[in-house]
Image 1 (cartoon, one colour):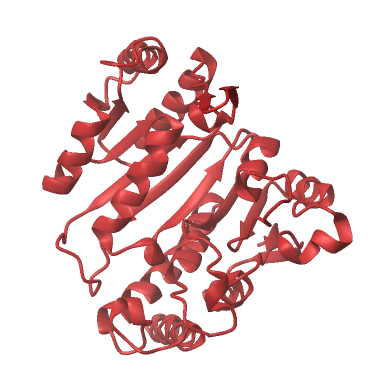
Image 2 (cartoon, rainbow, N blue to C red):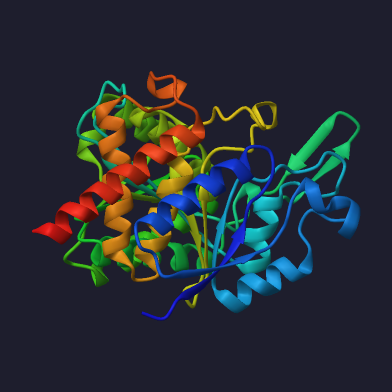
Length: 344
């Protein structure tokens, strides 16, 4: 198999240490990848005057796929967020965040398998805000038919391609009748084109309550940007926290960036303490996306075995292992399984 070229962005804070461990796991699983390392974040500010050099964007556009660690947005840089800038520049309009239970994680729920599909470009996060007069600020909520249709079709197709069953559109159209109303009505118009997909609607505040009370009733959910930000973290909380929450940001033409949902946690830099699971599972999502599903499954199996066993896990999972120790344990599980498969 020809190696797939992937842009690798180590990030900063705990990013480089997490990426180092995750890359070792991915390679141990047999991935056919050629890493194209690029730097972004605080470390490149002095050299480029920006945390997101244009050559990084060009490299991602060329390779189509990027795998990155968390990035700190430097204070006073003019960037609201490096991650937001990446999504806007590359038009990665779909944020997909799965939340599934892994045996061994302390959670009140044992049968959760949810996916949040978040519109990434519009809504209040478009960043159109200003001071009206002294003491009065205004932020503009932007919802377009084009953006709504694009993300809703993406969500329906995701359900089909991944063997899911149901799509829930989340909104607040009872109050924001024009903006969320447009999003909801677009979903209603598209739904009949997918008769094989069960379709339902939920108001966002009720959705939050439903997810806490009975998350097992839900499958794939699609929603505008702000609600997606909030509900994806809520879902991460249901399965044990951001330490095990991967994410992907996708655009047209297979363009995609894979990264953990959590931040760069600068105070933990160099302490070998942070859980690498979210970073590794983001690699699992990437491997599935580029067609290396067998490798992806080996990565997932290794992670699940180590967490279930509970001997070599980080503090947030109830253990005392460091980042590298947990990564090493996952690699050992992968290699052991591969050796057993080779003998059978």
